[in-house]
Image 1 (cartoon, rainbow, N blue to C red):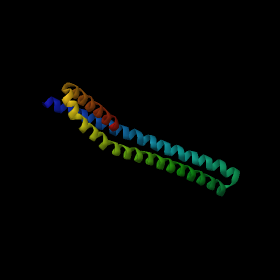
Image 2 (image 1 turned 45 degrees about the vertical axis):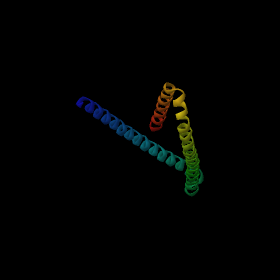
Image 3 (image 1 turned 120 degrees about the vertical axis):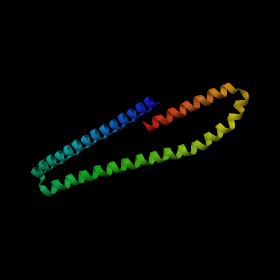
Image 4 (image 1 turned 30 degrees about the vertical axis):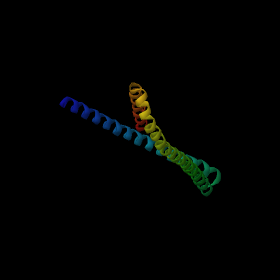
Amino acid sequence: MSELVHALTLKLQASGERAVMTLIGYTIAFLLVVFAFAAFVYAAATALTAAYGPVISASIIGGASLVLALIVIAWLGVRQRKLRRRARLQRIAQPAMASIATAALPLMLRASPIGTLVAVAAAAYVLQRATQRKRD
């Protein structure tokens, strides 16, 4: 029994270390992207200042940043709406499926007990795999 607990503890520690390393990796990547963006803005400002002057170049860069921010916000809004719609449809479908299953189960049990056992086991397996994919 203690070997099992020890193995499970090691597995949890390994998954925690993986999560921390993944978080550190994404943090480093985010910082590099921020630095690259700052260098790009500086280079664009320098190039535009030579051509149009400092006020116009700052206006162009600010306007472009604002447009990009609005595009990202709009994309996030559309994505959030799709996710809400999908969740609402799943909430609506779950009670209907449960009522169908509860109504059909006694009839199936009377007709074929072994077939019912196989169907319930298959449904449990599919349900377990579906929830496992959602967590990953």
